[in-house]
Amino acid sequence: MPATPATAVVVSGLVKRYDHRAAVDGLDMMAPAGAVTALLGPNGAGKTTTVECCEGLRRPDGGTVAVLGMDPVADARALRPRVGVMLQDGGLPGAAPAGEVLRHVAAMYARPRDVAALSERLGLHTFARTQVRRLSGGERQRLALAAAVVGRPDVAFLDEPSAGLDPQSRLVVWDLIRSLRDEGTAIVLTTHQMNEAEALADQVVVVDEGRVIAAGTIPALVGSDGTVRVAVRPIDGAAAPPATDYVLAARLAAALEGAVQVAAVSPGVLQVRAAADPALLHAITGWAAGQGILVDVAPGRRTLEDVFLDLTGRHLR
Amino acid sequence: MSDPAAVTADRGVATAAPLHRRVLAQAGFETRAVLRNGEQLLLTLVLPVLLLVVLTRTELVRLDTTDRIGLVAPGALALAVLSTAFTSQAIATGFDRRSGVLRLLSTTPLGPGGLLAGKALAILAVEVIQVVVLGSVAGWLGWRPTGIPAALLLLALGTAAFTSLALLVAGTLRAEAVLAAANLVWVLLLIGGGVLLPVALLPDGLAAVVRLLPSGALGEGLRAALTGQGLAWGPVLVLGAWTLVLGAAARRFFRWH
Figure 1 (cartoon, each protein chain N blue to C red):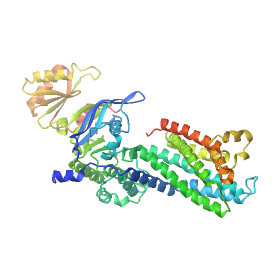
Figure 2 (figure 1 turned 45 degrees about the vertical axis):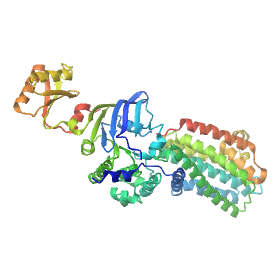
Figure 3 (figure 1 turned 45 degrees about the horizontal axis):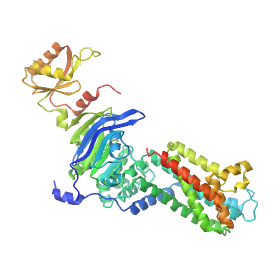
Figure 4 (figure 1 turned 60 degrees about the vertical axis):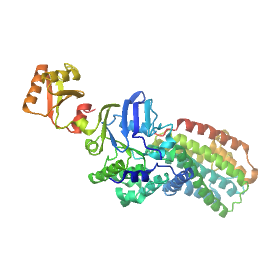
């Protein structure tokens, strides 16, 4: 039996343009087996285009994609039985009853999951005879997830798996995704919901404007209790910052007399590796006044939402 | 956690069902979709049967023949091909393309090739039902056809040409535009395309053009074959040429997204 490579998906330097506009612009990511990797980003960030390149639905304009060590387009025949796909827009035939659609997808595999058990688990049996087009958004999402996993895939690409789900269905869906992970499946999901990424993901890839702007485990991204986050910006919002983040980090470290580590963790954000106390906060704000910059000092663990907004900017686009 | 070895043993490597099972499953799925859709049934069965009966039993349209059913029945079969291979298929594929069904199924082991094979098989299955129903009704109206092998060849060629056209339209236009175009073409070809009624009933200039259309070629070819005039090579060449051109265009321009 061929072993599943530990890294199920490797994307490097991926570029995809639509009408000369780059939807994905040099994106790198990896997704290990037996883990949930979340592509997190605002609408239009390039998440869907990235997974569609992994699914073989789009041909990259640049860079490479390897799924289970194979090319999604050239090796599509070998990959299709081993890759499960949940599209953002569903892709389920509207006129057929839900149960028939799932049985139909299952018929494409030599050894599919037990359709009845899967239906029971996702609560599909209550609407098995209802036409897909008459299902609620949440019912349709659960059916689409069932279709993606019925073939026992080694890799599952789930595009916004819990969009439109009520809280109960969302827990059922998350539970299924976790047990797939525990079976060793590599799961790549897209989401713009922080709580979903925090609840499910073993690692997060933050995407904005077609590029990765941060990646890592949740603790690495949000920091821990022993850190202080310092967001820096000039007093005059229009002026450029007095120095680059790295220079500012070095200056702050010097100001704190080298007793603690300071790192530039993301654009405009420095991280001080020390537990917050009044003296430290006083030292930081005093340093900022000397530099002529405003700082936003937040001790302790941030939410992923804070990280996300810091990274992608707080303005609406 | 359960024993990891047990998990591995249970997982194995997922494999596809055999090709014939996948294609047959898709063909069955698509055939059932046509049969449970009221509009599709109206288009593919009810209207051809209605037109067959009305045009045979009434003098609504003057046909210079003593054997009305001999001329009308082949036309009804040609209309059945137009309905199933073109209009019905274009609409179904156009909407499946918009709603992502084509993309999703192409990521399963069915693949794009299996999807197209399943569609082709489903069209043939519906046509078999149409031929049986129309043939039975026509037989009841007194039809005694000859030249059936030639007619089957023409039906197959007509199906290939119109399916290619359906995929070209469905793969390039928006779903609403496909719906409008597929229905409009059906009506226009029904009235003036030489499908249901002999091309000779059309004005001379138009008739010459219509003989070169897939609709006129299929209708005229079937009428000639089934009234015992043998296989006419003109219609065979016209249908073959359209199949090549439309098939190449569909292959070139069809978009899955």
